[in-house]
Amino acid sequence: MSDPSSLRVADADRERLADELREHMVAGRLTQEELEERLGTAYAAKTQADLDALRVDLPLSPATVQRSLAARRKHLRVRLLQEAGGSLTASGVCVAIWLAAGAHGQFWPIWVIAFTLLPLLRDGWLLLGPAGDEQAVEARLQARRARRLAHDRRGHHRRLPR
Picture 1 (tube, rainbow, N blue to C red):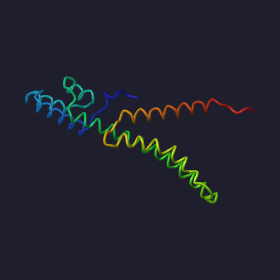
Picture 2 (tube, rainbow, N blue to C red):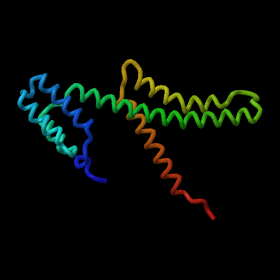
Picture 3 (cartoon, one colour):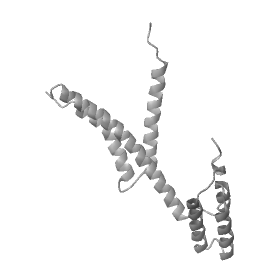
């Protein structure tokens, strides 16, 4: 895969940098002349490295931090939805089996539903609740992924005797 800094940039990338540079001028980090010079270079930039060079001596702007946080939250929401889809599928299959067997006795699929959906509900609350904790959600998702990968590796190394 190629180096991300050598990728070509779009007009939207140039506009985002221009907005960020204007914020830095308003904050007093750039003079009007420096802003105009950097804007000219930004609009002529062809690669991500060209854009990165224009902000190398500037701190992250609050808008950049907010965009980064929003992108991270969106990514975590997508991962939670993917896991929820798998959990709902497993729960749906168990409910279908229970119904196909005549729906007699105790509703045993509740245990599958509880064990698969409760961790996702907890993580959803941590992510979307009043005190969002992206780091905790990301750590839990990463730990579950690592457990699945380890389980898959163990399963592939086992061979049935002939």
